[in-house]
Image (cartoon, rainbow, N blue to C red; front, side):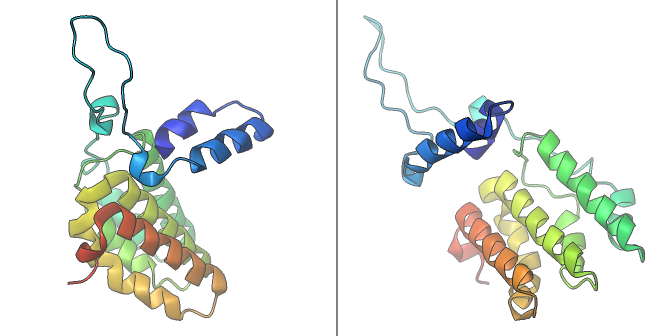
Length: 184
């Protein structure tokens, strides 16, 4: 998946990165993670399907998203709100973008940032929600309902960048948790 590709291409030239990404885009999403072994050792069975959780286990970040970060997300100063979102992003990326289904209160706090007066923070919050949802995978379904109304409200914003990021976040939510989790 995306996490492994990002790890593989670190330090490569931009032309090589573009070629690798182009080759990976040719693989249908339904085929990702599936392996059809064509050879086996004599006397042994063909290996079974590899699960991503076996290769890169999910990490519980709920303890790292503490009250200090959550209170910064509600601070009056936009710089502190931005810093708190960057901290959450670094926690998720530090877990190799593979986190367990506990958010530590992050979704509720991020929901409030989707109506922030600072439009750049709304875009950052949408990107962060997409990152957390993607990192959580299907476990994010129980939290998507918390932020869904606020994400949909972003479609009414006058700023095109916010509307476009809301679309990307919505697509990420659908891919991660399925359409049934989005509709109450």
